[in-house]
Image 1 (cartoon, rainbow, N blue to C red):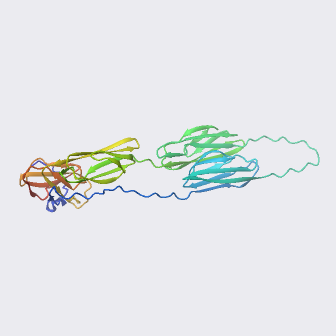
Image 2: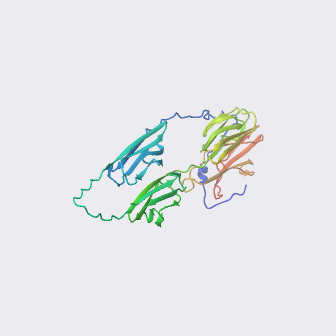
Length: 391
């Protein structure tokens, strides 16, 4: 009997045989019916693009400002023209400079297959003319007051979660500025500052003050979810088979493209799929390579043709001895002996997703049993024992 580590935790009661119901099938079993075709999905059209764009107020007194507000749905890469310019986010605010005459503001946003464009016009109310003095008088000196005007921008306005952006600003007629959130007080009238790492959409406001009053401007930064790391897995339904049997290859890729098979199979493959290979007459090595976000990914598996043996299959255990679900299964161990409960060194299987294994055995009579092992190395009791003959 081999030495087995005994832990305080028993995976399964011996009386219920670990939940491992062991059965045998000859190696000449009919090939598995894998999914032999790649599945594709038809294309879907984008949702309709929509752009709202307004000015508040739409009519101002000479020298006043208006607040432009916009929001786009299913659009990207917006740009301004007319009496403003530059790249704009798909949603945001913009406070104009003091308006000295009618102004036209146009916003154009790209959409799939074209663009959508909106224009707003801000009108100006002319101030009433001062009455003509009936008697000449010396004009009183009027102090010159420079109004405070702030310009704030962000670059870029769209980032991936965890990245930063740079805020830049300039002002006229201002003595000092302050920003929120977390930009600080007593900022110079012009400057720049890097934001911290952002995980959600964020808006930043800068307020500057001077003898002519104060002015504020807000910019918004959109945050996109991070790109998942690339991963590629390839496995076979049975690593050891008899000549003439078939296998099913299964693979899955995350954030991969341009997958290509080589070795004992070939051709372009989808990022995820299954394929039945066979009948096999010789050993084979199967390779799948795909382009990932950080370079080329390669996954491999192989199949060996055996001249004799038995296909062992079992039902995976579901519960621990205390009735709790098994969530820390680490490996299976297959014990083979020439007499009952007198086994040689076990075959250890670390792929706990499989439920069958081909034992390569010479002709003779064999006693076979199994155990399960958790991540702490605790080994269960033996399953039921099976006696089989190999011709």
